Length: 90
Image 1 (cartoon, one colour):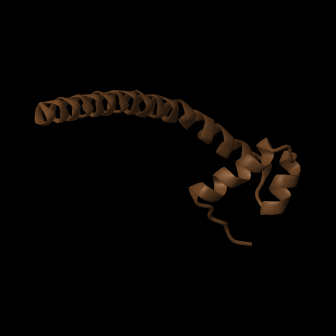
Image 2 (tube, rainbow, N blue to C red):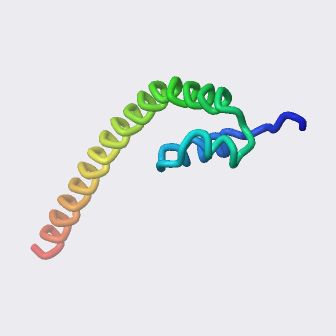
């Protein structure tokens, strides 16, 4: 039997199966991989988790800044609208 190639999405799905409570042996048997391959994928996945966490944190910080800027811009627009409405009445 030749080598099987799994893409990142398939590997992530296999690892999530184990996290859902399926034993390593069952997951490996179902997908036709060896246990060392499973554990190698797991170590690579968790090795990259630190980088992903940093990236997510940076994106969350940027998102917060953008939300704050949007709120300030909306407040300014509302204030200007009120002032314009008062000026046109008076």
